[in-house]
Structure formats: C-alpha cells, structure tokens
Image (tube, rainbow, N blue to C red; front, top):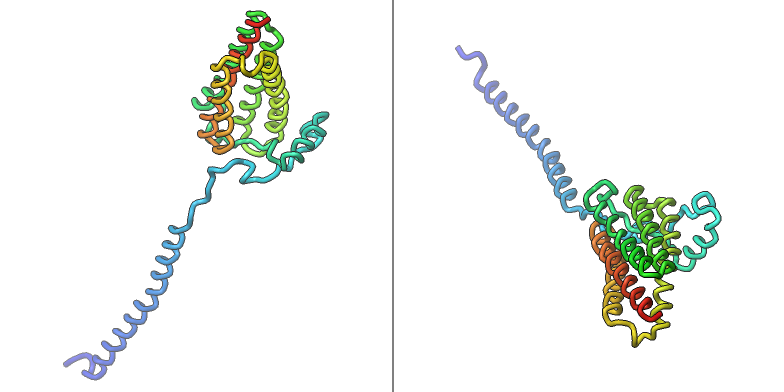
Amino acid sequence: TPSHPPRLRCRHIVDSSRCHNHRSSSQLPLQTNDKSETSSSDTKAPSNTNQSSFVKYGRPQDITSESFGPLLPIAEALDEATGGWGLSYADLHPATPRTTVGRVFLATNFFYAAAGLWLGIQGDWFYGGLTELAGIVSFAYHYTQLEFGKNRSEVRLALLIDYFCAGSALLTGGVYMVQAGITSVPIESLVSAGVAVVCLSLCWVWEFGYPYIFWHSLWHISSAYTGYLVGQDHLSRI
C-alpha cells in the first residue's frame, strides 16, 4: 500500500520543484551583482603617481618662521614669484639614502668636489671654493630629499640654501665667460653647458622617482665639468 495517495504525491513533487526553482532564482541576482561589481572595479583606472610634487600637492603650505627662520622673507618672495613652484621638489620614492640608486645619485655630487679641488690647486680658490660649497650643499639637499620624502619643510629649507650656493657658482662662472668674451670661450665649454641645461630641463619634465634621479645625476656631472672647463679657461687668461 503506498504511503501517500497519488494526488498528494504529485502535489508534493510540484510544490518541492517550485520551492527549488524559487531558491535558485533568488540567488541569481546576487551572483549577477557580484560579477558586475567585480567588473566595474577591474575597469577603474589606476591613479597616476608619476607626477611632480607640485602638480600633485599644489603650493607649499609649510613656509613658516619655524621652518625658515631669518630666511622666511626670501622664501616667501620666491614662493610668491613662482606661484609655489620654486620651493616644490621631486618625490624620489622608492629611492632612499640607503638604496643603491640613492647612493649613486648622492655620489654624483662629488664631481663638484673634484672640480673645485682641482681649480683650487691650480690657483683659483675663490671659484674652486664656490664649486666645492655647491657640491656640499647639493649633497645635503638631495640627502634630505631622499630621506624625508614629499612635502617636508626641512627639504624646502635645504633647497633654498642650495639655490644660493649653486647660484653663486653659476654667476661666477658666467662672469668669467663674459670677461673672456663669448666668442673666445672654448667650444667644449659651450657644448657641456648646453648638455647641462638640457638635463636640468628634463628633470622638470620627469619630476618624480627614477627618471628625475637619472637626469639630475647627469646635470650634476655635466655642470661640474662645465665649471671645471670655465675655471681652467679663466686660469689660462690671467
């Protein structure tokens, strides 16, 4: 004897089938939503981190008396004249003073030391000393740049001092070239100076990470060599 009448068995089978279909259909939207959310997250464009610090963060907000002390008026004037660009600097992450790339980058400042020392030995201790000082301050600036990273007042202060020292050496070299007469300056000096300017300009095109380190390293080498050539030419005329 069957345990259920035929009609009851049929109704039980139909009801079970409906329940199963209902459960299956209720799960489908959840699966579809998961897929759509995954696909939308996959299509999101990654943020561009290969930008200069100035482009990403805008004008410096840490130019204060606590940071710059007696140099604050000069820092404010430079910041105002350049719209904030003058005291911005490149974020060199992931390089640090302890990585191989960072150490090689810092070592390129010794070209200034070599050029300045040689000019001093030859008799021009003034220009040689300025070149030496530019190399020391440049080393300090780039060390803080590598050590502290982006948006730090310590780095901006070092950058401002670097402007003074490098500018003094560049101005003195320019005076030497004017005294000699631009047509009398050795072509090698002019070519080296042109290469230095190009490398420095490209630092501002790629003002981030490894590209900046590459071009700025070449700027150190080529500008130090230019200073040496200009100093040698000046010594040969006096």
